[in-house]
Amino acid sequence: MNVSVSDSERSDKRRNLMDTLALSVYIGIPPSTISKWRCTGEVVIPFIKIGNAVRYDPKDIQQWLEENTKHKSSGVKG
Image: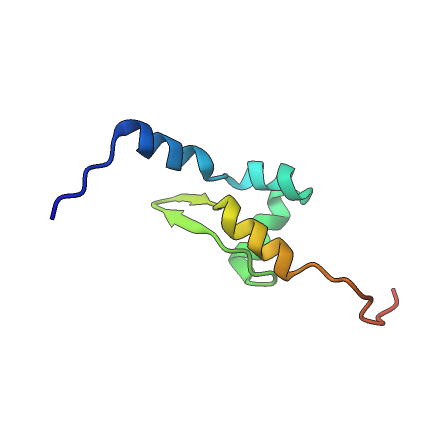
């Protein structure tokens, strides 16, 4: 079975992925912090690795933000 994808469909899918800088702007965290989290696993943000390129799917990021949204204080002071 041969599935054909048009150039415009491929282009649309690529446009939807964010690089680290775009994610940084979107969530308000410096790119260096996002890279550190990705490399150390300190904070697990879903990403896609394509060769040397790292990309983030906005749908995955939205879900990650929703899962990590706190509606009540954990009681930790600081």
